Each structure stands twice: as structure tokens, then as C-alpha cells.
Length: 340
Image (cartoon, rainbow, N blue to C red; front, side, top):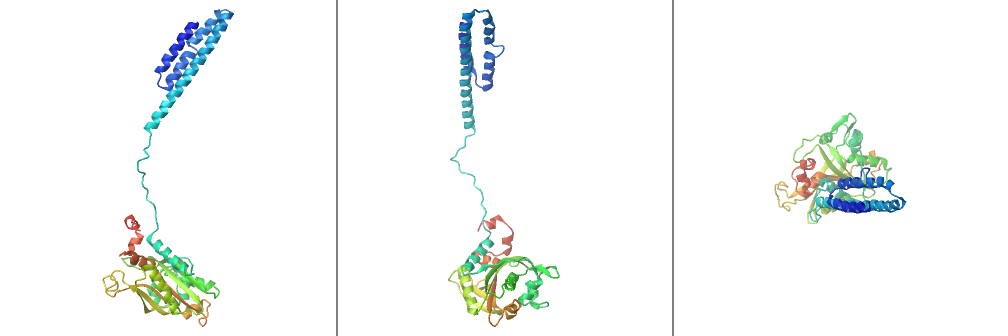
């Protein structure tokens, strides 16, 4: 029986060397240690042996079982290691290859202009005020010296929701709201936001566009303060080299009123199609706050003065970036937006 166990050990080694998969090793284990294995035959024959032979044979059988289990464990580790190695080779990632490029979002050109203008005015001590896009007729027109039937209302051809509410035609109602709640205190604000007018969309007009308006109210405010503020804004936005011109104009909520022109960026003031041969480009409107507007919001025009101004964000962006069609800002065309 001892010789039989020795030959079985050799057979175990030989058969294990042939195994290349885990299921083959498990089958071999069942063959040598299972219920119908040669080992079970030897155990059955132990009944016929005497006491001394049983001790010797029992020890040999236990050693054989331990030998088979140890050999199988080593073989399983070897096969598992080889399989892991093959898998790593098949799934290997070449870290020297360039990574995939992903497109990153960025600010819209109009947002860039708004934030740049906000930074300029915050640096001058202004606060940013906001208000609703659906406004009352009272705030949008009447508090700004545009009563019912005033001909200037036609300049702001409006989207009415009902007889008393409309989509705001400018951000001036935000100024009116601030004045109504200020309690007669000094004001220094800018009001950015969307506005709406009944315009036919073309290269220079849009039914929806964006404005930034400014308002300053305090004692001893003069037109010189307005000119200095706007001159600083224009030079910050377009450079120190350009010249600035103030022309008399008319707005119902300011008196006196002015329009601001800057030197044409394309021709340097010599005259070209962009400036229609004048050498100047209009950029914004402004003026001293009308006494009637001050009175309606609780300010005494004898002791308080103020100035207001308004500019179109799209117009500034078009001039800044050389864009010839306002509709590009709202088409969301990646070819246009990638340039900014």
C-alpha cells in the first residue's frame, strides 16, 4: 500500500503539470481525493490490516492527502497568476497616448462686457441693482416723466401683457424702484438687464436686447460729473487714444440730455462706411435727471440733483469685437461663440 501511495504522488505531479485551467485542477482533486478515488480504495483495505499496519498506513494516507492539497493549492495559485497576467496584457493602457480633448464652456461675449462694465463702476463706488422684467406701466413710463399719451412712448413700442403690465422697455424702472424706496437718500447704482421692444429683427435691431443704465443722485451733482464718469467708462472700454464728443439731445426723463459719440475705431475719425463718413460712432445717451422725475420719487430738485445714462450691451460688444450683426449673439452658433 505504501508503494501504491508513492506511485499516486508521482501520478498527481504528472497530471497537475498537464493542467492549464482551474476547472481541470478541481477535476483532478476530485479524482485523487473524491469518493471514488484510489485513496478510498486504500482506506477500505485498511480494515484487513493489523494494528501496526493500520498506524503506518494511516500516517501515509494523511501525508498523501496533505501532499495532494498542497500541490493543488500551488497549481491554483500558478494558474490564477497566469490568468491575471494575461488579462493585464490584454487590457493594458498605453499611458503615453495623448488624452481625449474635452470642450470647456466659457463666458458669452455679452456676459464678458457686462462684467467688465460692472467692475469699472464697482471700482467707482457704484452698487448693482436689479428688478423684474415684467413691469407696471407706472414704473416703466409714468415715474420717468412719460405720462399716458406722451409721444415719446412710441419710441418704446411695447409688449403689453395686460392694460397695466408689460415687458420692460428699458432698465430705468429699476432706477424708479430704487428712488421710491430710498427715502430721499443719495443713490449711486447701475442696472444691467434684458429689455424688450417691438422691433423687427435685423442686423442692428432686436426685439430683445440688454442694457446697463446708471443713476447718481446727491447734492451738488453737475453735468461735469456725468461727463467725467462717461469719459472714464469709454476710455476703459475702448482705450485712452479715442476722443469723446457730447451732443445735445432729448430724453423725457433727463434735462439737459446728451448723446455720447466716440472716435470711429475703424478709420480713426477720418470717415468710413462704419461711421457713415462722420468719423464718430454713437455709443450711449445720458443727461441730468429731470426735476419732475426727482419730485415723483420724493426728492427735492432744489437741493438734490442727479445724472442718468444708458447704453446697449450688444452695441458696445459689436463695436468692441467688430461684429456686424446683432443676431449672432442669440443664435448660439459654436463657430461664433468659440471666438470669445
